[in-house]
Image (cartoon, rainbow, N blue to C red; front, side, top):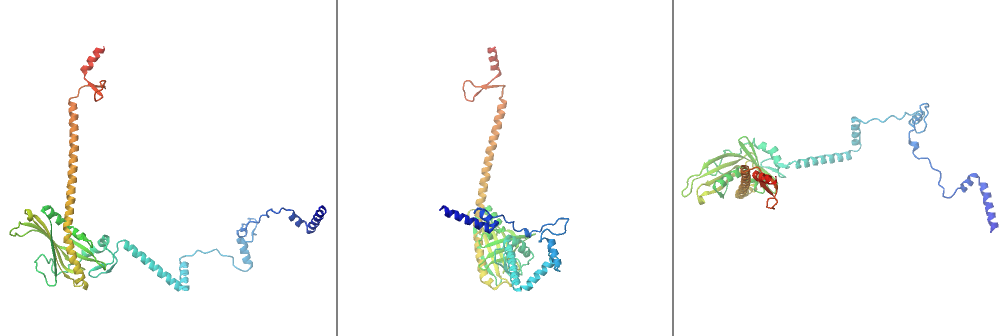
Length: 412
C-alpha cells in the first residue's frame, strides 16, 4: 500500500509539472474559493467626460466619440431633440387620423358620448327635469325642482296672458258657458273666527295643493299679480299648468231665513297660455257668525274648465279626470290642515302660558328675596358672630353690644 501511494503521488507531480504553472496554480487553490470579481456592468453606457487638456474622449461611447465617428463616416452628428409645439402636435394628430380613420372615428364618437353623458348627468343633478314636450301643457320626465321652476319657468308665466276671453268667469254669474265642465266640492272645516281666519290663510298659501301627494305648487309674485305653476304627477311624466290669481274680495253673505248673517272671502285662479285647460277655479270661505250650528266655517271649491284650443287631445279624457280627482282631494285636505294648525296653536299657547307662569314664579321669588333683605337691613344691629358653644341650630350666636360690654366688665 505504501509503495502504491508513493507511485501515485509521483505520477501526479509529473503531470502537474507537464501542464505548466497556470494549471498547477489552479489545482493548488481550494475547491470552495470564489472567482475574481467581475467589473460592474453598464459603465460602457455612461458618457465619461474628457479632461480639459485633451480633445480625445476617455471612452468610446461619449458624445464626442460618437460625433467623431459620424464625421468619419460622412454623416451628420446627432442633433439635439426639438421641442414639439402646438403646430407640430396638430400635424401629428392629423397624420394619425389620416392613417387610422376608423379608430379615430370610434374615439371621437366615444368622446362625444362621454361628454354628453357628463353634461346631462350634471344638469339632472342641478334639477333639470328633462322636458320632452314644450307645447301645452309642458311635460317633463322628472319632477321639476323648485330651483328650476323659479329660474326657468315662473318668470315666463309672469309675462303670459290669460287664455280665456273674459276674466273672471265665476265672478259674474253662475251660468255655465257652452263647452265648460263644472266640478264643485264643499266641506265644513270648523267653527268660529279663528277657524275662519286660519282657513283663509291656508288657502292663500296654497297649502291644500301641496297636501295632495301627487301635486305641488310653485307660486311667484310679480308686483300685485301672483302667478302659480301647479305640477301634476302622471304615469307618462310630470305636467305643469300655469295659473294666475284673477280676483280676490271680501264680502258678506246674503241673509237667509233661519240663518245668521255671515261673512265670506273669495278669490279665483284663471288659466294662462300654456295650460291644457281654459277656465277658472274659485275658492270661497264662508262663516255664519251666529251661535251653535250657525257658527260653522265652510270651504267651497268651484271649477269651470274646458279643453284649451292648443292642448293635446288627451286633455278631454285623461286630464279632465285627473283635474276632478285633484279638486276632490284638495278640498278634503283643507280640514286636516286647519286641525293641525289648531293643535299647533294650542301647543304654542300652552308653552307660552307655562313660560309666563315660570317667569311669574321666578319674579315672585326674586321679589321675596329682596323684601327679606330689606327687612334684615331694617332690623340690623351691631353684632359679633362667634361659634355657638351651646350647639344650637345655626352654629353661630349673635350678641349685642350691651351683652358684650357686660361680659368685658365681668372679665376685667
